[in-house]
Image (cartoon, rainbow over all chains, first blue to last red; front, side):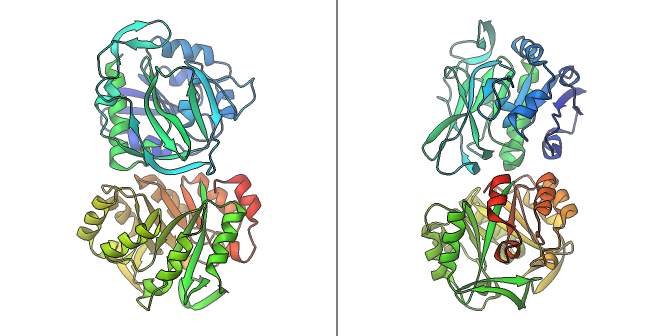
Length: 226
Length: 237
């Protein structure tokens, strides 16, 4: 039985995400203590609510979580859960530090239409050439092996997804970015990966059959990378 | 959760009906294009446009729809009486961001599959529910089909969203069917849009908490029961 730990930071409805990933040989538990969630085989950071409250609910465990993820603990962050992987967000005060696994900031979208609500394209980074994989670990950015197609890209059949976000992630450099999305005049990272942690800005649980297949494929893939 | 103003068209006017009854019209504004511009100015980014005459098979407001689509700065999801691929194409060509399908999609699943394959993630299926039963033909026919079964069946199609209207509650501003919407939001593999019964901010909060992705509001906006600036402050527009 695979244990999936969803960190419930108290912002609201997690049922859709739970339903999208439960079943078969999976035991999904929802916990308000992130240290408990980290004991599962894979940690899920869900995507509802605001950055400040979400990171505050970690109770200062950001460094502990960062170390676990940098060491290869599988993790999937969805929407706000992806943003929590970064250093800080304009949505919150400077004292509300993110997990800091991926160097960079979360900034407010500066487009005429904010929030970005609806279906949009996923532009995968040079399909077939992306190099992060399950190989050796390099300092800083996690597991890399030049020439190996990233396993997340390889298993994805996804070209569009449902988004609901007013903030976007800006990694310090492009190395963690697996996919981009363009909304009006803004282009932002919609899928990132560092070590065995994947962040997606969209909502796979609301992205039809392909979104559900994607999220389950990513979970299986990350579990195999352990 | 996104909040979307409704523009229901009848005889070229913007109207609001009570309880899905064409005989019970409570709001009528002669200039729908002006109404749409007003909601856009208030800060709403998406409008839900329904041609009530076309839904009933009594004429069409297609020209008015085209004028609405030309309004700048808002996305429009348009429906009402869309029963063939040509109508879908025309609405997209006119600038609709999504097209809403009702009766035809419910009655002819093979046609819906064909349409969804041609316009993936751009079609919204509207399931109008009386109690838990699906209705068609401008709310005049109630089918022996449970709306939960319908949502489950629709999950395998690449739709943009599923819109569920609680018809009996429509236009009454006495609260939404939060229980039904919670159940359907959980079942649906695409965003669930809810409609019917919203009268207060608390109703909107309840729907957001139930996992609903977007709520369409009509009467509460047109009668001023809900303040647009307060909605836009708290929810996504």
